[in-house]
Image 1 (tube, each protein chain N blue to C red):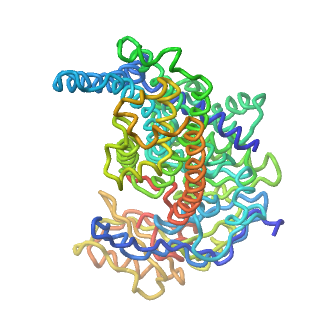
Image 2 (spheres, chains in turn purple, orange):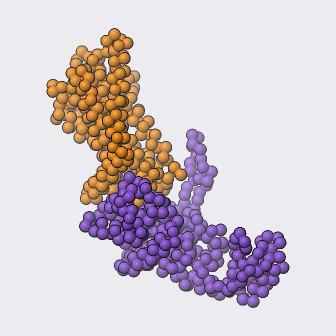
Image 3 (cartoon, chains in turn purple, green):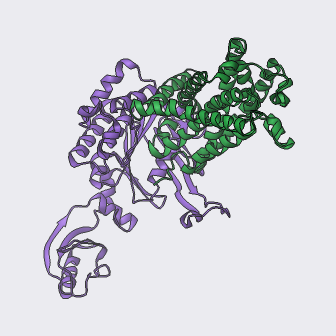
Length: 334
Length: 291
């Protein structure tokens, strides 16, 4: 067990339905049992930057909650750094940390530096190195000028940056990043991605589990990826290998004006493996995976016959999004 | 032990920062001094109103009784509300409870540390209130060198601290599995305990059944002990001497407080473990219900 940084064995989590009480209004959504994780088995080696991709409600955050000892699994087992997340939770906690993106947590009355100092002390970081680490981390997220500002005076994005620092400042052995760049501006997100890569490379044995909505981010950062949907693990491999799965198909992106009858149906045409359509205010973007390249002729003909006018047509290399669509049946935002 | 001590240290610091620094000093002073004094002064006015209405038949020793009890009970309310409110504020407002839970911090020590800051405030408030009460001749007559017993005061304060920790943990544990409306629980419970512990009247006034309930509460013995340590025993001729506790000597009172506190501590620890496990199983430690 100890050679793996993370391991889950048929891990499951079911949110039980809320018990009906005569004095309490019950949320209809909570009256059904909901399976958030369904027998997920994963293995992550030390030093890996492992990504979890999946749509909203796929079970990514639930998995992170269980691995960080925040939530009990309903079935199966999980180990982090060789320690059982249920039986050895107390022994495990000093070595892990978590950052949840898109939330503005923090003690508003304290300054950014005080918040970070506090969490360093919780983890027993020596006073002598705390300030040095805080300064370094604040520089990474471009928040140095706000070090002495009260957290209540920060914007949501700035709070998120502070939380990112809080995750790293304790120098965890295994770090869980749940959508760390969600809602951040482009520059901040790029700096964070750069830092994440440097952090993992800096010390052997550091491991990171990252969930993200951004396919490009996952492609750029992750050594391996798992695609998860409706609590089930659909695939797990390196980004390159995952893309190779769809490389057997030719992929075309076609932009056209709407047809006379609105959206043009091409999925059933001969040679078409899969088709996804995205509407923009001015055009319709069609992405088709073809079993054979020659099938593009039929697609073009169908568009033209339906009253659409082709604006652009190009052949593209497969992306993680194509893999995702292939496995899940729809895009992340669908 | 080291982890517990460390958690206690920083959580007390955090508690003090949050409690004392959330607004400017004027508001803090208003909260710390004006609120408890006004609360006690209302009782003083009620006492004089009753005295006036009954043509002076309300015995004078009732005033120090209710004044000192009420000042001391402020501490109970502060700690009970303070510790349970940590769950609500950290989970719903600061959104930090989950990060504390998954850290190496000793989770219970975190609540205790945050509660300590509240207790310090409560102690300060009680001291200020009692000191202010000395301006009234009836209270000054009761709180004097003859009545005051520093040794017993320390004993009851120490036992009271343990009792308050247990009370606070019971409420904090309950709130772990409740939504943000759980903050009303502490106020409700504090009200019930206020009624049953003989804060503003001797428990002999209560129906027999409720007297037994009052006698099972450590707060009843603690308040009686605090009153005795500060003002001395009620005169034998006073209606206050009809209280079931009036016949007990102070040592017996302290022993009973110790015994009921031990029971409360055991119950609070069992309840804390059960509640924490339930909250962990149901995902309540990070579930914000306010938004």
